[in-house]
Length: 214
Image (cartoon, rainbow, N blue to C red; front, top):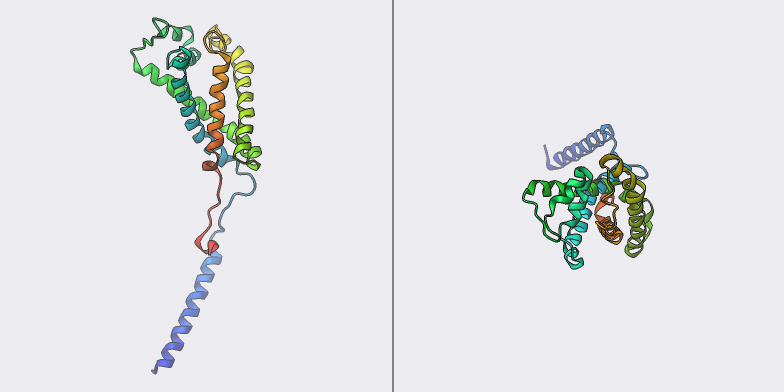
């Protein structure tokens, strides 16, 4: 065989390979992509971002509490009144001195706080992505501030104000002597601001195959 015949055979083989590839591509299942608002994805990312937002709000409270003359872990002590009732208030032997020797209880309190942030992060981020996506970063911070105050009012005065007395016989979390309203509001505000700042990390970006990109 001469060289020209070999090249013709090679060209025919290339055409054959290309045809087989096209046939395989038509038989492959279609590439799935979310249509419309991907609520399940944003609920999952909101859950994850809620943990980080709760970490930041707790850290700010730990740093700011001594400035207000409170113990750094005062928020956790008051927060533990929900599962422990009035017993949690006895974790301090003297005003301003934390006397909790069992680190397990403290760890449980912090974990409950982070778990609460995880749960609240789901509806918070769903609303933020539904409404706040159209705003700039400043607009999202303003919207998150409004949403945070609404969340604080709902949690404290629409739920905890009656739920804690019903379950544990007291209203320690909503008692302004134990937890001033401005502290609770500021904690929610820091949570909301963190969610707004972390917003881009949870955006849904559909996967594109290399062939689609090219």
